[in-house]
Length: 504
Image (cartoon, rainbow, N blue to C red; front, side, top):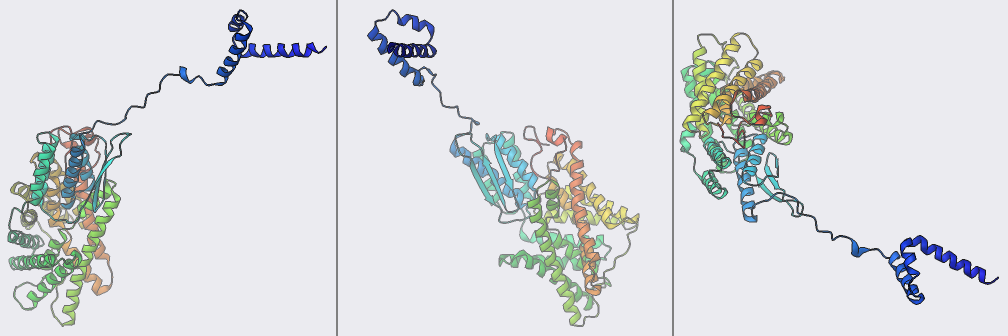
């Protein structure tokens, strides 16, 4: 009776081993001696509980994922080069979309295929991704100073084209960019001052003033420019420079009239010409372009700058008018202008051409862009004059005229190897709302309403939006464009059109 439980236990143990082991191995164990059989059973039980790590294949480390990039020194050189090129474009008034597209095209052409670009109003950030095992390399450039030097912008555009065509290395491009940015202006300062005066004289003729008024506008704008340069050397903020400019221009016009220096009953035209000169340096076109292309942070920064500078100009004009009234001046500039007729239309076209050419010269442009800008100014002024003779509103006439300027500049500027931004900004300069700004200030002072002042703002926005629309419409008319340009990706006023083809 006592042997049965033991036998039952052995039977159960034997049955358990049959579950753990294969039947073939169990038959082989019967031919092995009993002592060796027990030792083998213990070893097999241990191997059953132990993980068979020795039989697994060797796992190799994962391969490095990412592009093949140049060495560390070349990487940093390329990033520094592209952010400096973007700085020149931003300082010259190019849109954020143009700067972004230029930097991406350059990084691809110079061996950095995976880069991210972030452009805002005051800084440019470029980050190069180097794969899964290396951290990205980032370069930042702050745009501290802004100046209108279209020769520098044009030279930078040609350098970008040479880099994209691989006719110059990154090291040579860096040296060339250093030469461009450190070069002096192509003209002396006094030439720019005379150009600003010539622009004011042309605008006064465009508004219907006499030759005497044009001469006074020339003198006043030249004096305002020299005063502004002195204040700039003293590091006075640009807002206060605008205040001083508006004050000097308005007070000088009132003085000339009341001292009977000029036989002019409407010195408003002189003030309007001087205000147009002071408004011409603002980046309204770039602000509207950034807003349309989706760069809202940069657009907000530019718009705030335009609003602040315009507010400074308005403050200076209002202060001059208030001072004249307190001093008991009898004759102040009355906001009135004659209606345009077909007889005066040729004069308007010539005056618009002269104003655009003088603005390009004052912005240190070379001869070819100056000639194209003069043609654009003639087209814009002629279209605006023809539309106003048909009783069209100033806002609609300004928008359509600016659209023609943007369209013509977008089609012809690339073929003539001229930056479209130079043509666009110079072409709409004669149409800037200097007269509407003064009329709005007069209405605000007399009646306390800002209707006319809001109309001046609407005219400025219509001009900028029309130029951007014209550039957008010009894209399918060009030849040799890339896929993105054929799909009408967005207006481009600076930088290359296509990274893989020769630029026109």
